[in-house]
Figure 1 (tube, helix red, strand yellow):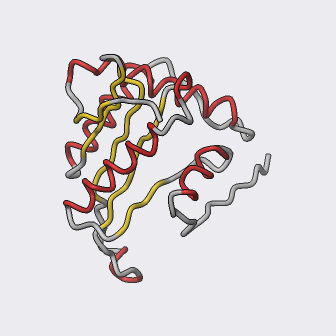
Figure 2 (cartoon, one colour):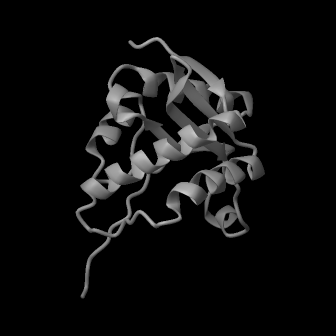
Amino acid sequence: MTECNIIEYEDKYLEYVKDLLVELEEYILSIDKDELDQLHPEYRDRMAILDLEEINNNDGICYLALKDKKVVGLIMGCIVKYDQYDYLDYKCPKMGEVTELVVSKNIRSKGIGKLLINKMEEYFKSKNCEYIRIDVFSYNENAIKFYENDGYHNRMEIKIKKIK
């Protein structure tokens, strides 16, 4: 396991966060068999800001993994908000949602993802969440194995079909 520190996000690390999110999106593009994802020209400058706004507006948090004063991983998560329709057919337990998890490709499979997910689980427990939800791109087999090995399972699936 690689030694690193897990800290709460600080603005001075914003450029690292942007780089990691671009790295993740480039990876998703490389495995997207449907070719529906894209790396929009504004992605790098806007995505991190939008993600950070989402966690700030939804009782969330961002943790960074630092190795040698460089950000090598991050996790973001927030508390799920339900709407009036959810309550009609769902018990609506307090739930945390991991919105982003990425470890730099140069340092993957060294335990950093596990440290980050553990830290986020602690945060959600401190907020009295009963469950954690994570959306995983179905072609991201490595991420699916990672989460399944940590006790996560499928609750729902989304199916798509190209018709044109």
